[in-house]
Image (tube, rainbow, N blue to C red; front, side, top):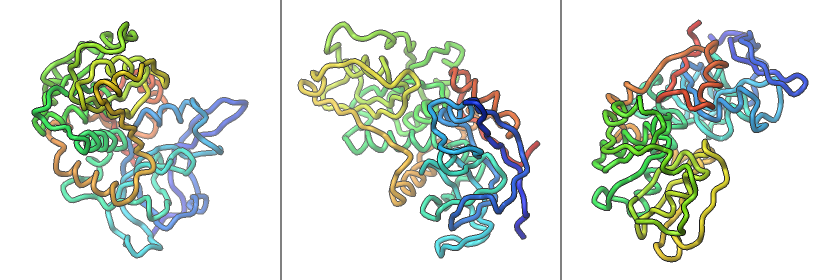
Length: 333
């Protein structure tokens, strides 16, 4: 039987300032949707940090329950694809942004947002992956579809110590790629190598724009979660017929470059949008995660937190101080 109320981290806005507090919420206040989910876990992404601190004006209406990812058990369903007791995961579709999200014990969403939990992945593991890990696999699959193979050469992962980057390193390492991890955290070098990195470069190498439109070609592929100057700099260093999967902007949304890498080396920049991915492709990405992500290595990247920890974690992730993945146990005090 479904309870009449549930705990949630509620955001409220007053005089332009966003504040958060754990509140008891009536289930009748949940937004409409086909599937009611008993949420067990959520996670922390860079976008969550922005939403929790009110940056970017991503939330359209307050009060609001954030949390762009959630994993749980179907408590009620009005859709034939899902039945009570099914284990499911929800990422994307601006859940936690324009629709109440996963930082709560209950959530109600449209059925076309819901993905059955793949075999071999637990509810907790799915949130150790979350949007960050989902985007990592999506980015890798885009590079793969554009011809990337291990024998082509080194693959650079920027922002490698973060959630998206660390999962990308682990995936590439398992699949036999020569992975070069870019980070500004010397303390994480041994950890990144344990995930599968064969070499480390300091992020400062990409901190200034290139003085030349083309530099010595090095990278067969890049998964870039940083953007900004980093993206412009690595673009000048790409091998002929190579690709960059651009999937983040932690270093800024603007970059400076010329058209020469595209015209003289045939370089591609592949935009990765993990929010509005069609359902069939979304299920395939989760299937590949179940098959190709080395969970034994992922476990070394996971920390666990509660709803009450989120305000502090939000500031930390925006400052680049969160290592790996953070799983939020929404039912633990």
